[in-house]
Length: 337
Image 1 (cartoon, one colour):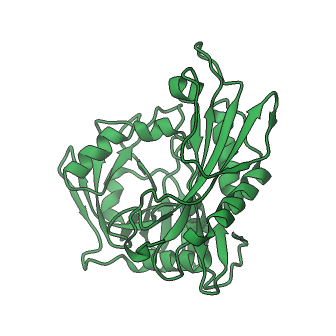
Image 2: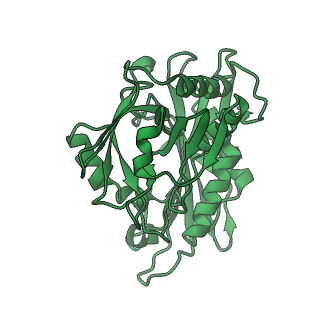
């Protein structure tokens, strides 16, 4: 195996095994390991026609002590079950979800990057409707699939300030739609705006609320946060996926003495923040250096020295230290593999 761990992109690398489980006749089968990278689906499977598909993302880290740690898999299991219920799919049992995460890491242990190389093993669970039907209705049968792949930073800049673009001419989700569920369709809906943003020189885009275009919602692949007056502020909205990373950062922010506010953030308030960032499993924290409003041309500048802000850096380091076993896991977030 010849992998340059320090230069890994956030992409797919073939590993040894994945796990599969099937729901049929009212019960889930025991997860079985497979070395194949392919699946077989009926041409009338509901996931292909009516979008019954959800997924998750979590990471495993090799610590300085050599031990492998999974970060908060129970929370991913809960969110996975909630997403399944939201799309009228058969939820995968949370305990079995956690055990499957541990097993897929163990089976691919040689792909867990070394400590200190800035990479991790990314774990991707999927749930898809598989029963053949042409009428619009929930599937009767489902497949659970989980694979793992080593990855580097989500944004190529790593923990360096990125540029974001505010968009108003696209919506990621509908007001009472599926935004709070981790459904593939939400990400498909963000592609036009995101790819145009890339073409115009931005790492990602920032979506606004779909009703008034007045409040910050989220970036396509990440939650948003801002810091000012010793306060960690992140949007509260029923169209935002609840990020487990953001949930963790809220706890860490309180632990280091910051106030924490989940509330609406008006676009005009962006100019009052001392630091802003995007956060999620893939990115952890990506500090934002510049936000440009595509419609008005207004520019918001942060990180003027080219480096992440002091508090963002402190939170990032604190979280990574917990994930890699470098400091006490006093919140009980890690699961040893």
